[in-house]
Amino acid sequence: MAINKNTLTIAIIILVVAGGVLFFLNRGPSYQQESLIIEQDLTPIELSSEEQQALQDAGLQMPSGEDALAEKLQTVRSSDELDAIKADLNETNLSGLDAELKAIETDLSGL
Image 1 (cartoon, helix red, strand yellow):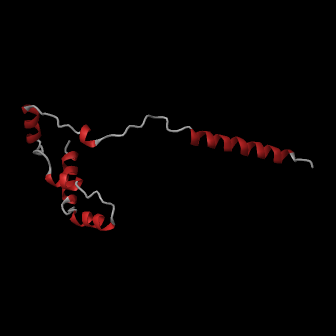
Image 2 (cartoon, rainbow, N blue to C red):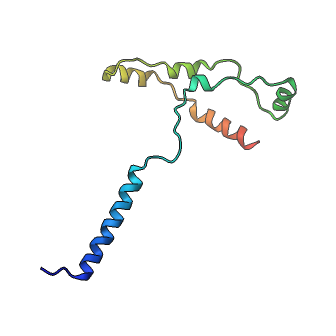
Image 3 (cartoon, rainbow, N blue to C red):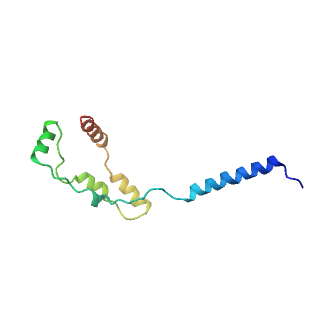
C-alpha cells in the first residue's frame, strides 16, 4: 500500500498541531493564584482630620462602623436543604441595592 505524499504531510501537520494544543492545555496557568479571605484583607484605614475634611468638602461621607445590612446578608443557614435555601432567599432584602449602587457610582465619578 503506497501512502500519498500529501496524505503524509497532512498527517504530520495534524500531529504537530494536536501536540501544540495538548502542550498549552496541560502547562497550567503562568501566574500564581492566591485565594483571598475577605474578612482578613479588609482592615479599615484611619484617615487624618485633613483627609476627612477633604472628603466632606467633596460631599462624601465615610461610613460609620459596621453595616448591619451587610452583616445580615453574610449570615445564612448552613443547611443545604431546599427549604433552608428558599428561606435564606426570602429573607434577603435587596430593595435598596440599586439606589446604593447609583450613589457609589456618583461618588466615584466625582473623583
